Length: 30
Image 1 (spheres, rainbow, N blue to C red):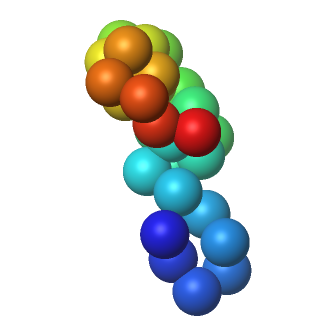
Image 2 (tube, rainbow, N blue to C red; image 1 turned 120 degrees about the vertical axis):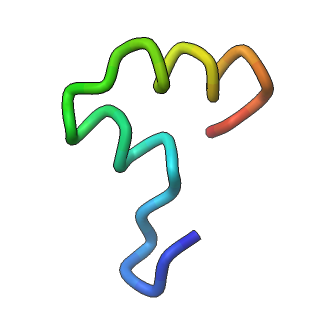
Image 3 (cartoon, rainbow, N blue to C red; image 1 turned 90 degrees about the vertical axis):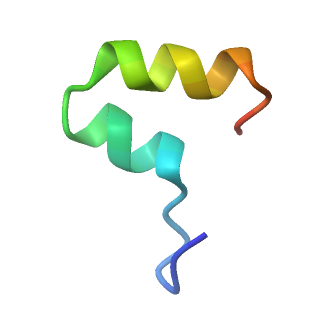
C-alpha cells in the first residue's frame, strides 16, 4: 500500500489494466 493509500488493485484499475485487476481480486486484493 502506498503512502497515499493506493493499493496495487487501485493502480491497476486506474491504469485501465482490467486483466491485472481481475487477477489481483482473484487472489484476495482489496
